[in-house]
Image (cartoon, rainbow, N blue to C red; front, side, top):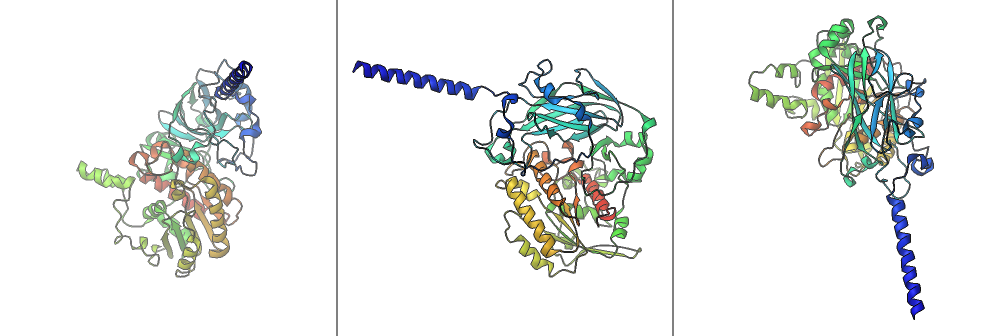
Amino acid sequence: MTSITQRQQLSLVILVITFFIIYLHLSTPIPYADIHEDVITTKSNQKIRGLIVHDNPTICDEVDISWLAADREYWDGWTDKIMFMRRDGTLTLNSVHMKEGEDVCVVALLGPTPAMSAIRNEDHIGPQDILSVTAVGEHSKLTIFMEQHKTQLNAYYSAVKFNTPDTYKLKAVDEYRSYFYEKPVLHIYRPVVITPANKIIVHSNRTSVKKKPTCAYDHINSFMLGRWVNASVFKETDPDEFYDMFERNENEFIEHGKVFVPDNCSLDYTTVAQGGYCLGKQTIHVWGDNNMKRNLLALMPGKKWCDVDSILKIKNKKKQKEMMRCVCHDTDITMNEYPWLQDANKPLTLTNSWDVDARIHYNNIPDSITQHHNLTYWMESRVGRLPHADTVIVGIGNNEISGIRVTPDEFKQSFQTFIHHLRTTLYPSQTIIIKTPQFFCCGTLKSTAWNSGRSLTFNMIMRDTIQSYNNILLWDIQSIGVDENTCLADGSSYSRRNVINIENQLLWKVLCHSSNR
């Protein structure tokens, strides 16, 4: 009896020790260098390319990111860190100096992953972690879109060009780890601010500045890199480009005192009359959500909708505040004033003395393409009641990002099916233009699934899908996004009113300056 008791006690001790060893193993963070890539990467056929297409080597090729992640002199391996690298690929904790027009590599290193999004391996489309990074200067600001390193998976990087002399600091937030952004209803939003290791000073180099070509549509890389610059500073330093971009209408494009300036081309100003001349007598079918509705309201000739410049001149502050709600909300839209909003057979017309008679038939899409299973058939019934279309513009994705139950993979499958039906059945020969969803940063919207990661991933899905079609063009608005120009603080996923004017300038480039049409 005693021997049996001793054996039981011994078994109990062994069991306790075993559980203790397992606990230590699970609770000890695993160094990234020891994680095999096939454990945490996804199947190669599921991954899609990032936002920016790099045809040539970039400045980040000079950086040994694996060495940087392993060197404990600069990084302790635990806390998140972000830094500007020198142009020769080395790191300094002092300020980095460079000339305007040059590029530099930004590198972020993340500590151990707190948890995996699932016990078993899963396929994912977007990036593993979501970093919202902005370079903030005294006069300018730009969003930096980070890419995950192929082998050093806790490292993210981006080659960034600085075209405006200024002193920049990095404002960085680690918003989500381990794909938690895909299903935000299951994970509380707990952003972590990343402390920058240094800053960068960009010196003026006016002698090397050359006149930039006019922006044209690029089907391979529709993502237009740029920055937001203080309007007064831009006008003083680049008066010719300033006039080309705005003529004397800069107030229509200013947000928080800044205007968007592309890096590699000049976004020359296109008036609604010039855009109408480009369209001629075309019939355009437009399908979209409320974001698309706001784009069309901003295109209307005659009385301007939500004219911010005029509203700011109202002396009655209470009335001014009330009217300014249209910047982020649809408070001032009445159907009687805009009949084309409620009846697609009463088109919005662009007409003038240049023999222009373009007719825009707007159809609101209220539901997600993943939920509205009969959407394409509903569209087909409405197409038959409209005049034959020459051009088709479709804006979707925002409702899908908002949908709590819509995963990136579900959206990818639904979007590919939708585009195939759109091209083969509804509009087999017309030029089709797809508008990407809104830029979003940095937070969440109550009772929705909106977050930076979903906005980024759904945009990537759309961009990757459209590349396989020759006569489907992308109206890409993601690149002009910056945190202060969203309506998150006002409880909306919209872009602010004057940002819509810049979106429409990008639309004119697709409509009027594309060789793919």
